Length: 194
View 1 (cartoon, rainbow, N blue to C red):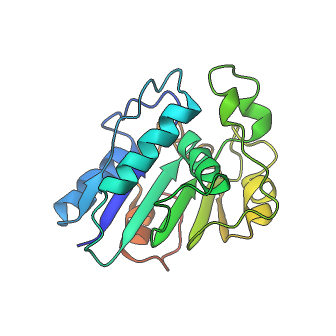
View 2 (cartoon, rainbow, N blue to C red):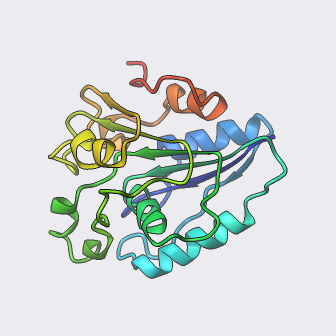
């Protein structure tokens, strides 16, 4: 049994139709340990509070299974990078998937999340196998996820055509490819079926 920590983004109140909820339900149904917490004040989050919550949830993630996996969407993908930049303890998980991280140019325009603007990424090395997936037309990362995140971090990056922010507005309720990746880290992350 693997252990999964699924982390949501800004203004996400974990709607039942979102792919993260769908993923949590599927992984739980397969007998895995799944933590999918509602992070505090998702509409007006505080970086330090979210970092403390991340540390707490990582500490509570069972370590007895074959794998400990983190799936972080949007603002939580950037949260993960802040934790890495600070050398936070507990980041020694087996795999991480960063989904649709928003760019600094977008975050700084919104006072509620400006403090989450990504830390300097040059020379930053994630502590374990990390993959990035994003839409090739994500309005929250107009510079492009590969340019802003994948290349500076030196991590494998998959761009999905027309997937925007990989959220409900983009039609991502169910997303079989992310479930396949959770079960097999070598699986390719592709668009959801039409």
